[in-house]
Image (cartoon, rainbow, N blue to C red):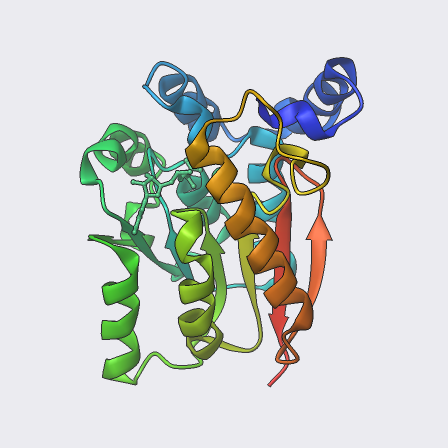
Length: 230
Ligand code: SAM
Ligand code: CA
């Protein structure tokens, strides 16, 4: 059940890490990855190859204003903060400030804490507040969604108005350990099986949404990139 399961072999994943990822991994990200590895539920953090992919994508897009839903200890958040320009801003949301506090000293040491506006609480009402305010509509270059999978559809309904035309929403874990094909494996808990069903649903909705063009990226556990068209 680890992140390399979508590749043909552990050796292939190791090859990618050693050849392309670790030699270029920023020191603060490495430190946060190592600290996170000792925290309960550490498998929730995005893996280093995904952090590298997101970082490059943000730079290619010249992204400046972003949203993150699902921070945990801050691995994807720090990767984003390092990729954005000095005046870049991330509105980052999580119900759990305690796990964010584990990563925060490393984020501060990396000199990028000023780019982060951490908002504690369930993301849906926080997004609704942003939409009600109105000023932020169509203003974000990028949004990364990596929280409660049962709400991905609800996040999509809101984020489509918050990202600008040409902006990108990235949904994480959209291949759900490869279980989107075939029957659910016998060893999966009920919670994981339910997430499989939510994943199948969001994948169907995203593929049929005329407001976006999409690409399914089989990095890590699958990332669906959605570019807003209108
Ligand atoms: N992107 C993170 C990283 O790279 O380390 C991992 C995020 S982890 C998979 C999911 C996070 O979503 C958890 O920290 C959890 O507290 C948070 N979460 C769960 N439900 C949420 C909700 N309704 N609103 C905001 N955050 C939520
Ligand atoms: Ca994830």
